[in-house]
Image 1 (cartoon, rainbow, N blue to C red):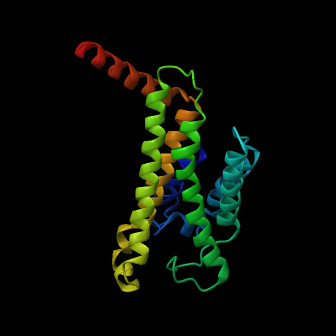
Image 2 (image 1 turned 120 degrees about the horizontal axis):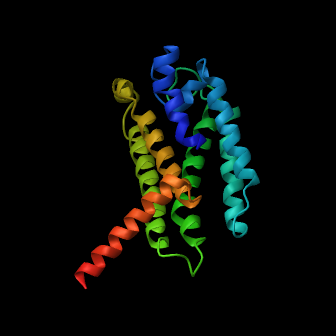
Length: 211
């Protein structure tokens, strides 16, 4: 839930309530009055991942890697007013690397751990849930692909021209919300479970009509 609300708290609410201009990426909010929101949320995510116990050692290690990446994002800020690939300090480069690792961890959870941890004799909605997990993972990877192409294929001058469209911010926002959808589904959150149930019921009704 923290990840779901973070982009809203930093972006629209930060602009509307505090008059903070929309930043190029979520990490840039570290250098605004919303620093505590950014750092506190990442710390909360990191602590949760550290305390999370998966179904096997591989899932536990994935959680630990995600925890370390989240803590790195919180404690090692991006250099102010800088391109993520053109930092002025090792701290800024470490932040960029932690960001990549963090999003890859989220994609790995959605594509591997969440579908695998369903029980073999699960309910009829498990097929729909697995589709949600994998779709979320694919969306995260696609967002990473778009952000990587933006960072590595465009020149600094081209990126500076396109920064006004906040491409990195939108990519991070989409990736965070995609994982939130998978996490809410995995946690059987009320809204997500109702949506999964509705999709499963519709699919079953369609199959019965065809038979």
